[in-house]
Length: 158
Image (cartoon, rainbow, N blue to C red; front, side):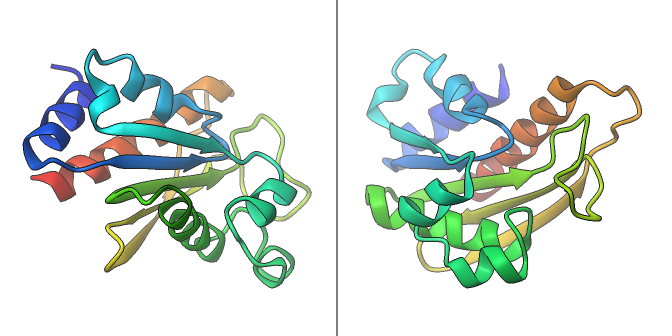
């Protein structure tokens, strides 16, 4: 059984609604969840917030966070996940922000750096990942980030 199928199955069993806010994964998490038949009963929407403007205006990431820490930061991921929960009213959410490559974002942050935030509305955790970018394949970084996000949801559901 695929990772996203396990997530949808457990969301259904627990009667929970899931949502996500994605940057570097560009909607891949939402795509994988909605590839699963019946996912509409547990997934209403995902937000692809690729620009800082959308992170701020739609998800409520503060200008101060974006200026002080940048879009690729623990602080930004934390605010993104809280924002998407608030916006959608879902029970649980993940948010992903990072540098997919092959170039960086004009900071000193390395390609492959990703922050994944998970929240159930009561508590929020943020994972810092440094995906191997030795193959110089952007899609590998995005797939690994989506896998890690879905694994994080699965850990919570179990």
